[in-house]
Image 1: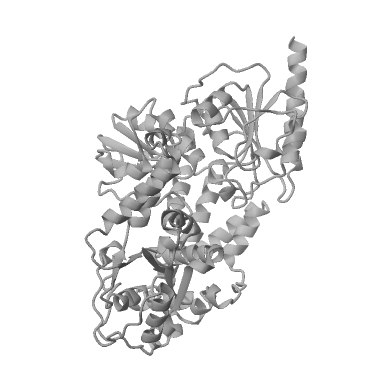
Image 2 (image 1 turned 135 degrees about the vertical axis):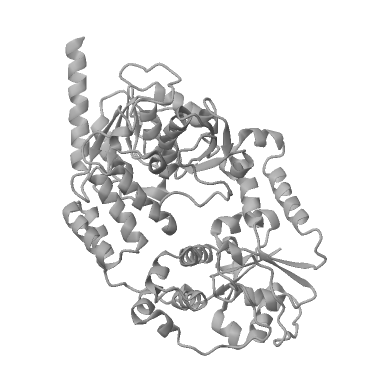
Length: 575
């Protein structure tokens, strides 16, 4: 199987139509095959019961994936199958398919970002071009596709044939011959005056004729710069990694200055800039999302969360829509599918809302990551994310937005424990975790040198709650707690009198069980900790140790060390 990927509005539909003229080739419309294979592989890797059912290990799952591909295209007689999906360009997908079929060949269409954006604007003709460019889902999809393609090409350049849009439109026969050479197929003379239509569902994006192909292939002359205007055209310059052009250095705008102010802890300046942005660009989703964080800091939970929700259009808050046709829950009674969003820590935090829904007379089905399913299933029916829509429900609720339909303010949050401990605490035991998911550590500026943690807890009865990345940093004198899965991790945390961690899923589970938990947070904290102070309404048992100055982590760890010494002294005195 061959793969067709690329950037939106870069000619992948035209190329699909062109290649479909070959009698030996079938080109699919945008396909879900990659997601199907990814779901099967994820289930295999994360579900121990599935692994037991496949006795021959990796060999069995590879044969299952091969069988899925064969069944998917069993009615196509053409010897060459080209499956179209932008997701094929990711390094993860490529690595997966290299196991399945040994060789991966990806044809990817490319075009400068500014031209792709201009093409969308020309097609849609929005009344407010700037607002459209800032918030339209297709524009966000464009940037996500660019990132996926750049990342995959950087790891596996030998797997790609890049087809530039201008070359494809100006000399389609030449580009078709390049594709034939890449696929080791004989040359084919294409009919450039009779291109066939392609099968695509334009309703998904709500843009008529998004994938329309004119029968005759010819280049249209118009000014792409004039469509966007000079400022937007300049803003979107760059995005040509295939030509070895460096990414442009953008002039700092108000939103960049606001972020910089927040990172260094100048929240007064950050709020002033947030207000300026609201007046200057009231429809900018990034500005609205950032303003939401400041409202949380001011104690306005509901108002802040409504603006955080705007971040969904930018892929900076929550997850994608699960595909259900049912409405979002807004206070009704019925069966509610609570879709757990974000990382594992976010999901543990949001599990509290299942009980709140139940108290309002609803039957609750929890939809979550497979790692957490056994724990959540103790109280509620559970379905894993991949099978979300298979569970009956009248309504659904995206968990990171739950405070909005509940109408909660900070005083409405319940801080008591809602997950049971599974073991008695061992007197004096302290669980320590010094880093979390590397995807988030630097993004949220919460990475700190592990030695600071080790020095702060030195001399106390500590066990490591660190697994995978950075676990090797554990001092030799510190024992390793069992962390094979989330149930063993839960038991290990339950055996602790105190857990000290950065903002990780371990910290959330510990606090959710009522274990005393000290959480180290950066100056510009995660939205859950935006409210100032060293306590949080989310967890009665949690204490926040805040970084006081960006770039320096000494202060919170000095306080941790002093607090531990104080506790030790009090225990000795009491004894």
